[in-house]
Image (cartoon, rainbow, N blue to C red; front, side):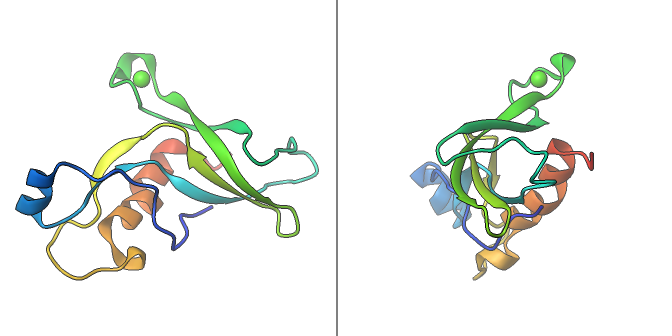
Length: 126
Ligand SMILES: [Ca+2]
């Protein structure tokens, strides 16, 4: 599982922040391309279904643990055993990139964060 070289669905932050930082602030709705693991054992999903997969802190209450992540199924590719998912709710507020420089999605800080910290926090290897 990884975050593909596609832009995350995003919400642009306030204009003042954008001018100050000269960067785009994103509220991260994680957009993921997941391989369907053990397709024969996995429940079948259809486009526009909601599925629960992984968990991430969403209510700022660490005492009650992470909340399950709800995903909207945007596409199902049964030939390649893949589904394209979009988190139902914004999960974080992160800058697209932390320094003022030309950067593409493949090398931006947001994608690096999604593929490291977020991935490790939201999913286990099980
Ligand atoms: Ca919580």
